[in-house]
Image (cartoon, rainbow, N blue to C red):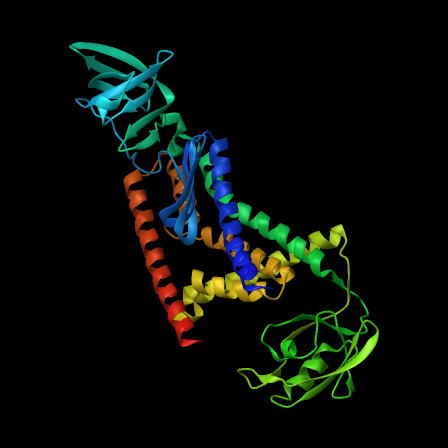
Length: 424
């Protein structure tokens, strides 16, 4: 697999798992009638921006996640105050645009001083125009234009906080839920790709050959049948093959393979790994058959279960402090591992993408400020108290949590970059 293809697949993996997560938030927020102002992939400066309907879709510089910005979650950026001079454009007896600056350049508008304004409940504005107060109704999708930017107003019934708890909770939970669904589907695709091992296999196949490994330097290919190693018949005994090769670091090994029905002898010299065991850089596999529909679902469920257990075991080590900084990996290390797995083939990359999607879903449900789990926890407390919590205090908690997560991300990323420079 070429370098450009590997880079493309690595970027695609990140894009897919983050986009499906944010799409879950976006879709269920829209279903609840919430105004979604922005659907963003990444953080930081905008690289690309496109507005469709009420929502602006953006691609940002830092590939460390994404967000869906809903009306009412944060203070509105643009405010219109009594005493302010503005210009309005009216169509069908409704204000469709409010201009806050460059008023002399606004043609076909009514200009006046704001006497009173309510863009959330009454959707009305009163202007003092040449000494007379005139009242206008405002369109629920009217735009406020200032400093070259258009901001759609958000009536109170389009705010996140105005919706029932169950709809808000669904809009929050939908992100991780979509990651779980994606993981299940991808594990099923993986099961279809690799098939089901035969009950009584009689041979060992080469499943893949690693680049720049000893096997890639000699005539060993994916699909070759490994008949014998150093004269010892292998049959279907993978462990026997690994044992013989493992005991021969830096020593030539004679492998008899069968390709297209013809026997060939290949000499390869295993390289020692960190433990000193010889490795030639092949992934052994056993003969398989296509998985049935039931087996595909069953295998996907099994992989979901085992992967979930694996993820929680790692999270437990993180919580209990049983780790070193080098054990943590940020976007840089994840991208590095993803590119390495992409070189092994689409099947392995599909399984890895499923694992990453599952991890993203589980991680986001942790009760950590700024994550979806914390927001669901606040909604649960609101349900128990039967009244909303102080929005300013909740926003502060999420802000502090986000800042701490970003700080941890910076530290881990810096460590990843140092590790790459050191060649570790």
